[in-house]
Length: 72
Figure 1 (cartoon, rainbow, N blue to C red):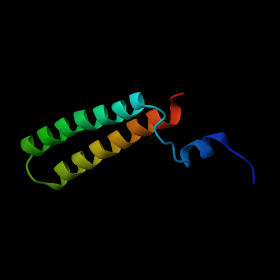
Figure 2 (tube, rainbow, N blue to C red; figure 1 turned 45 degrees about the vertical axis):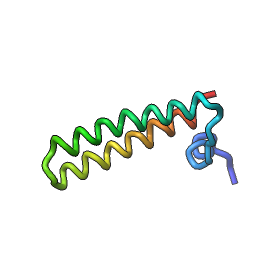
Figure 3 (cartoon, one colour; figure 1 turned 135 degrees about the vertical axis):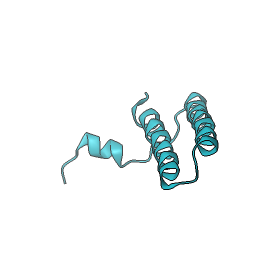
């Protein structure tokens, strides 16, 4: 089976490498939580609000993946 570095990187668990990386994950989640609360309070209960919160969750996930996958 051929080895594809991009596939290996995308589908491999990337544990935090150091406390600085863990702090970055926590900081991202904290800022996203602030925006989630603001969105929840500002927007009426609706499908659109649910989608906005889901997309915010996705953004945090991808930002954390960028840190985990690409930092040396």
